[in-house]
Picture 1 (cartoon, rainbow, N blue to C red):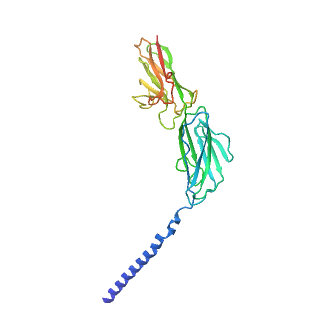
Picture 2: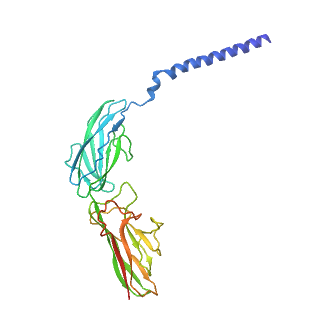
Amino acid sequence: MHHHKRLSRLSRLTSTAVAAAAVATALPIALAPGAYADEPIAPELTVSELSGNQLRPGEVRTDSVTLTNNGTAATDGVTFRLRLTRGLAFTEPVDGCTYSTVGDKIKQALCELDVGIAPGESYTVPVTYKVLKTALMEVVEYGTGRTGEAPGEGYDEAHRRLALNTDSSADLVATGDEAAGKPGGKVVVTPSIRNDGPGWIQNNESDDHPALLVNIPKGTTAVEVPEECKPFGIDGPTGPSEPGHPKYVCQEDDYTLEVGEIEAFAIVLKIDKGRRADTSGEVKATSNYDIEPVYDTDKSNNKAALSIDVR
């Protein structure tokens, strides 16, 4: 019996010694400076911000940004990308840059910089572009990937997006229509919205886009409406296109109006059987929420009539 107790005690001592040894072995590993060896040895680039000053049509904007390496290794060259919306343009071609058009008429320069930016060092990249006469609401995208490769489509400290307004305007114009028909008959009216410039219109910062608000003439019913025309409630569209509503808001799916572009919407109206007098409804160049755009400084041509001659 005594012998058995001695074995048990020895077993307990051995277990304790093994556990202590395991802790002693583990502690130096956990506390050693080598614990940071798992971190990748790589560049970690950031790009400074471009000037956000208001653009002026016709100017050449000359700016620059600074690439800084906050990583643990030098870059093996850097791919720098610059993208401009259609109211902006590149000036003289730069050696090492490839130019193309991507997405929605976006101009792109992809520039291979043969530069090794060491950890803690910086490198300045010139950014030059021209502001066209049609400029209004523009976007500049610029930068690189975190290790110097071409950037993806998202934005971070190495690849930035800058929205810029232009000291300019765009003139929305509403055009109505007139038609003649008999009580109980159908007529087609085609009101439209036009951009007389000088700026092209694409709102990149809001969903408040140019649109034509159409009030259906009293004594008539909209029996066929384009898919681009949605029923309008108190302050915005209420659902998909369908006939029978008193008011519609019409706009193209690309939410864009080039200078001189006309967007027209054909609507079939049925004149009430009991209607004897002429009637009309108003169309208005506005936004899809019926908020008058701030860039439209001439409001004198924003409204027009849909006139129905009942015979």
